[in-house]
Length: 241
Image 1 (cartoon, rainbow, N blue to C red):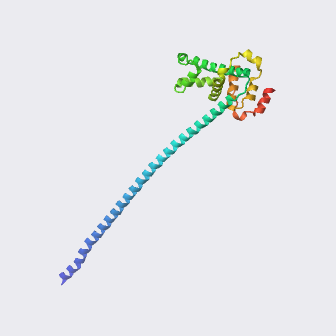
Image 2: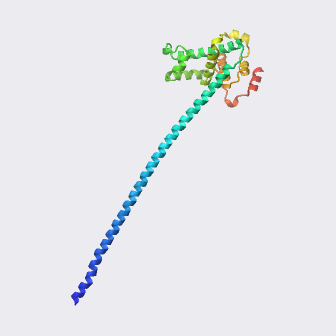
Image 3: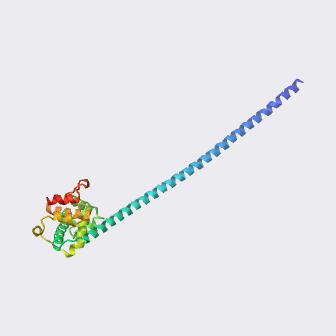
């Protein structure tokens, strides 16, 4: 009886241990499956985030490229509009032949002076730069010529806008004008500054011509900050006085 009782007591215990181990193993496997699924989901989310980040970077680059193209196009249009306005102003000038000759004389002298100064700084390129037009043309691609050109403009107190103005005047009226020497100019007109400020309405053209006169008469143009510029009437009044 005792043996029978002992056997009956041991049989349930032997069954409980494997079942517990099996349950623990199944739970462990289930955790592993859940963990693997979670890892897979995290990997997929991370992959999607990387793909979105790459798309955003591409969109940013596209936006930057479009912005640069738009800004360049806007500058080009603004430059073309300014050139059109200057050409219109140059062709609309109503000077007498004598006044035109006097203005032309200052313009041609300042252009010759600029060309001469460039050649003095680049003696080895004299044959390759026979005219000022050749300097303007080659400075775009030749850094050495461009640096010298910019230094010459700085020495004279001029800027590219001033050169555009005087060159536009020269192209428009140079074929029908004559050069007057300084003494002859003084005989006809005593105050060239007043004539320019009174007759030339386009500001860029007016500034360019005034500075050309200053370079020839004083050796260097005087630049006045925009905020210090007087209205046209005050300027003319000060010139009269």
